[in-house]
Length: 96
Image 1 (cartoon, helix red, strand yellow):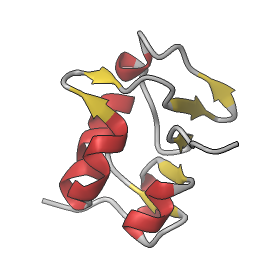
Image 2: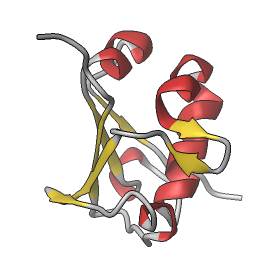
Image 3: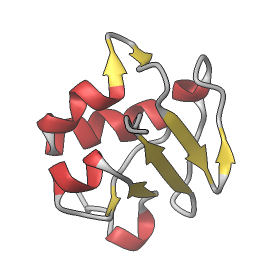
């Protein structure tokens, strides 16, 4: 079985608390959909789960982008991705 090189996986750009929890600004994670990539992110960094998913749905106010385009939170988990894609994950930020 051959493993995928980092250049052959979608890039996940992390922001705010997610960057702090993972200690990374970006990760190369395998997956054929946004859901698969986020599941892999949670597997590798369990501390991010509370920021991403509420059961099988995206948490309210979480913003997911694909190649700079904001995705619909109700349908984004099924969005297909390829190794050339860049996924942005922006958790809700409190403040004022």
